[in-house]
Length: 330
Ligand code: PBG
Image (cartoon, rainbow, N blue to C red):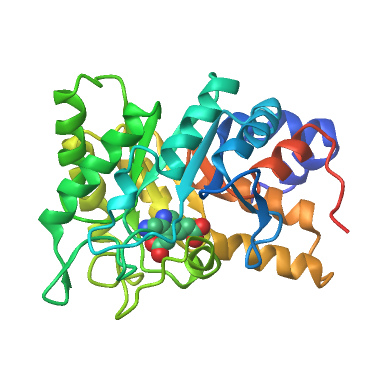
């Protein structure tokens, strides 16, 4: 029945035909590039656990930001790290913190580039946890206040958007209240709404020196076996004032992105995390995967699942591939 009237191969006959009927598009405008900052001078130091990623000092970051912007990528996501750690993670909201200074430097040289800052305490607490520890537990409400303080200090330094990644309950509301009170009505919040406790953050934790000193993050990040609570997390963040919601990691959680797309009418970001990045790079380095093709296939799949925005360490590679000028790393 239906054969040979229906031959789906008719629409696959040539490159032009395939382009004509192609459903999903990917452009550099969809991408966000993460950047790592720490204090120092003229610093661009390679990160051993993540190929082609560097720690920049604030005075050295503008050049990188310009390159990203010139590739057509509209936004960067800043992560700080510090040797100065204490119980509350106070370096996170220091006026002269590495992230605060880096925002200023980027805004000075590329004002059009959107600067998003990750908001979390794990790179600044002695415990390495994403919040303050009281009686051996991460204290949710005390942490929310400190996160709001941190977010405000980034916004005062010039950040366009803040992205809380800590997974405390109610933190989006806390941050939104503080920003409104301080007159920052136009600052967007991109909430890491659905953040799973994942093995795929491994390479990143080496970068930010943010591994928990005891226990793990399973009392605040989500269990990878679940999907229903993901929808509740998103609904709450939207109610509390999030402008963009995020699913993280991306590739093991495409079903969650898809469900979120069907249920919510707001921009959805997906974080293609450090482990996903290094898994593909390692396979390409071994010669068993074509790097360019695998990057495109994974980013398209994230987009096809329903993400509007992809945060990825491949942003620069992808922008170059899309512009037709990527050359394979030797
Ligand atoms: C901090 C944070 C992490 C990532 C982003 N923000 C690490 C973690 O939760 O342990 C992971 C990013 C990546 O793996 O690329 N809370």
